[in-house]
Structure formats: structure tokens, C-alpha cells
Amino acid sequence: MIKTSFTRMGRFIVLSCLGSVLSCASPTEGVIVEAVSRSLEKRVPVTLASYLTGGQNALVEEVRVLEISKVIGKGKHTYWRAQIYARGVCRVMFGGHKSFEGKAVYRIYKDAFDNWRAAPDEF
Image (cartoon, rainbow, N blue to C red; front, side, top):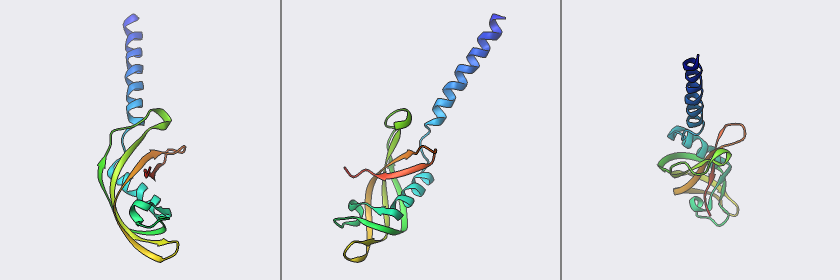
């Protein structure tokens, strides 16, 4: 009787720990590329656009992951920093269209609906 309840408790602890580890598994390169591409389509950061106001509505030609940090934060505030290389064309405020190419650092995180998101880590 005691042996059985200990085994059940042991299983519970192991499964709880496994769930914790899986819930904060780091994003794959494919996930990062997709999240960064979606972010770039809306807004290109100043660091990439080389334009004072950044860019918008990008046509992304290439995104590569150069480096991924270890997990930062805990719980709901968990994120990873990813250094990426991106290339494409974006619309700028006073100059029509401008090509962009270079490295940038993005924060990769999960939103409230458990979807992967990327935001430029400019400051």
C-alpha cells in the first residue's frame, strides 16, 4: 500500500517536471525565421532599414538565424534573444522603397495565445 502510493507520487512529480521543461522549450530555427518574417512584414527596425524612422510593409527575401541565447526570464515573461540576418525591401516614410540587409537582435516569445512572436530588441 505504501509502495503503491509512493509510486503514484513519484509519477506525478516526474510528469510535473517534464511538463515544466516542455512548456519552456526553446524555439526552433524554423519558428524564429517565421516569427521574425511576420514581424518584418509589419515593421523593419531602424537597425536594418538604415533609415531614421525604420521601414514598413517589407517584402522579406531572406532571414537566417545566426545565434540563439539561453532562456531569459521565468513563467509568462520567458523569452530568447536571437541574432538574425535579414534581407529584403521595405517602404520608407519619405523615400519610396529601400532595400535592407544586415544583422539585428530580436526577442522571441510566446504570446497569451501560445503563438510564437518576435520583436526587435533595439534598445
